[in-house]
Length: 467
Image (cartoon, rainbow, N blue to C red):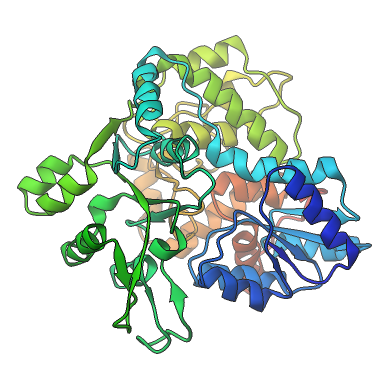
């Protein structure tokens, strides 16, 4: 999606994107873009003119629960405008006239994070073979496995191998959306259907028409909504909230769950008839500890990814580091490994990524690495993906001993949170970007907190260059 007025440079950027296999939607401004997205015009990335109100656009996307990276672009824009766009939440800034290699790199970066599947371990061979076999069919697929095993990545792999690969892939996290909003998210609503429904919104079933719809963590869906979902599957039509007119939909469903759904059925928590409708084909993803040959390749992939994201040189994993990673339990599976390597590349001080930079968590949630000054980084197994949960400032650090407990007694959560943020910032020598990454929050949230502390008269560490 290209948003704004950039003269002939828009057509040039669009032509490059088309040559790289992308589909293009052009909107005159962010208001039109938001309307198009709410009415089912899906997009994987938005390239927005820097003269548009990018901060408001990103806020509006968050309010509408539309998860899509925004790339700012402009002609002869000054450095301050580019920096402000990044501070407002844009993932990248692309100068125009466009460079073909740069446009290609942006498109590749957007798709690589969610589409890359590393599956070289023998335990993954039958899983991939099963996915390849059933992908061309129209069968509904249930993907099961522990949290963080890569169920969404597998669902995207199946979509790309299917006859619907040229259609839209839409993912809905049933656990992350409040119960009273999930029905609207799935089936859509008409203007005035409920308080806050200021306009018509196309639901995910309609948006995915002709493509694939992923119901992530479907086991968390309320039983009443399960009954409505079952009807949609049976009738192949949806009725928006506030409307009496059904709309035909042609969607291939993939569902995921980290629970034992058969047990949930026995406990009366999940409808048996819906379970049989969704569980036509079952693919179980093994835990990371069950596929040890993939640990190092995945770790290297994440290390390279976050080195690029933070403007750091890429580093190979030292042999001792590889052994340390392979011996870990990985309770949080691939998601834990990803966050561990993100923190490691930020903390590494050697030419190769050294073992001391890798902070592992034991069964009690405490770090196996040497104690960091004043704080411990948050448990990566508890850090959710950007598209899943509303962002929050991390909780207090893991309690290591009884003395630490006594030191916290009588203190407010706000005080502990403030000390954690300031100590992390001091540990990063004032670098806001690195501190935000370690804390697991956005740079915008960090800056807002620092401004609050400054207004309260707290001394804030000076910003380092590059932060």
